[in-house]
Length: 557
Image (tube, rainbow, N blue to C red; front, side):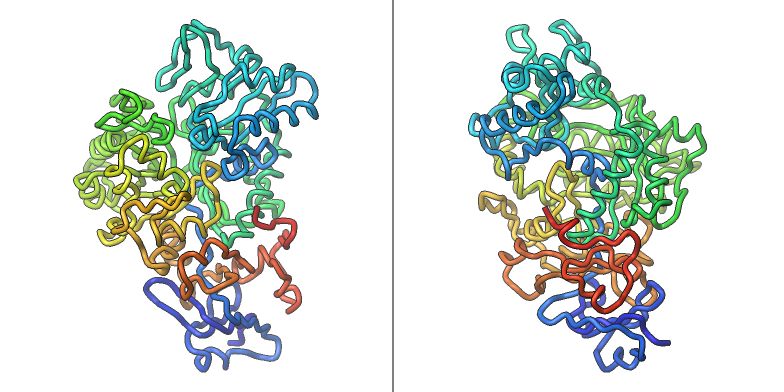
């Protein structure tokens, strides 16, 4: 059989397969991989050839935990992320500039600020947002996504006054009886419920834009971890229409919002069932929140935080968590449950253990604990016994590690996100970003797994370092495993789908510091380009998948 595309150069097949000199692709799958001598004979007159030179080809990245639609929506919002904004004045200036361009009364939305990275070391206040945008409601979300600040107009639109009670699992901050504007956890629903809902056209545009960004980093698969967060049930037909129109170039694993008032039960009642769809758009799981974020002091711990006498916030009491997980497990969904602090992980584990019955056993279900950042040895043992998978974000250590030390102390921080331990114990940890909480750039994740360094150079838990090959395995094969797709994705072996990325340098051969400067030059899905930075396969006359994504439209940003 003649190959359609022959890739010549260093190919990383996966952690089990090691390296090869060449790879042949036909009909969207890997036809052969091995030495150049073993593969080159598959080339025929119509075979296109791609020489890697000093680069490397790897299995395409799988973003196992992110929020794709909110990320795409957020690309049009005011960017307040710490790599862009480090002072309060700069944040307020950006909000003021956005308000100057907006009609009176239109919402101004900002994303990604980190109060710990601002020069003032605190959250902005409602009064400061009022001064920046006196004629518009303003809502800015902290980078963790578990809290934000509203100005007075936004608070009024949400019906929040000085005597509004805290909802279950949420906090409306007050000082001296006055609202500060800070809204945490489930109280954010009050504000978000007052915002205009995105139209289907806006959502499809956001989905396509987000997919283009991810493809430019080497991803061929991704996840929307809380379908319903933007527009409720309307997100389901928006994704389906995006796929039908050829505007969904990534493979998507979809996770429905599963808190009591969210869409999972409503979608079930409308006929949506586990594993509906195809390998391009699969409805597989339900997510429930157990706690908040360690950086925001709302992740739930057994021991208190250092800056304040709090142990964090449980989103639900035990009986509610047990009932929710039992319901979704018995319906047949994969459980993808957010729990960061050890106390929240314990609540989730106990609820999962209670749901594991002879009538509805856990065997083979691959339920997940999302983040699972501060897990104990006993909790790891119990997870392994039931096949419960951790889906961690090593990039949190890079972006928030120094804040963890401030909030939790050096010992707890050093043991956070124990990638080496998880891998050695057989947990298959699916490294991911939680984008837009953290950067979606997979090379930051790789760097963090290999070095355990924060963005300030602090090394936390060096015994948890991985090799580059292990780190790539966690961002490729492990993600596919959590989605029941390891038989066709996450490695480059004969018969596997030809989803791969060509990286701008061989990250498996250079110094760890070089990883951060790496980019994807080419991303293939089914052997066809969904991103082609330099137009290499266009020049070889290999037609891209539709829609074509070429630089500079979807360059890494």
